[in-house]
Length: 88
Image (cartoon, rainbow, N blue to C red; front, side):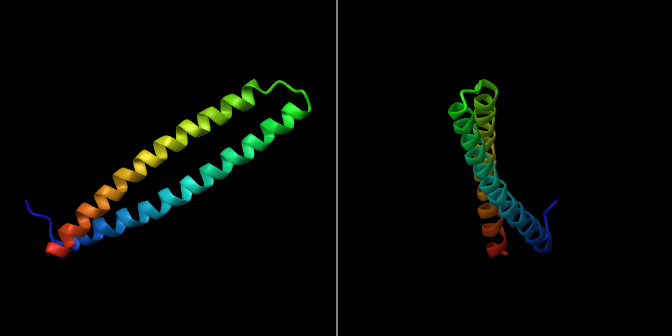
């Protein structure tokens, strides 16, 4: 069953919105990492145990990598749908 041009266009619009959201999430995630790294430095300066804070930085970085991978998939899907829409 073929998908209509209107449905493809709607899918493209939805994926483009997801891409905007992914970009926002990545930027906010990067800021969270910077904030947490600042906290780690503050804890180190105060001679506090930083193991948990450092673990959180690591987990945040791992999450950011996954968000970036997901963004790549969204970009690929947007490009595919754009080509489909342009082909009409």
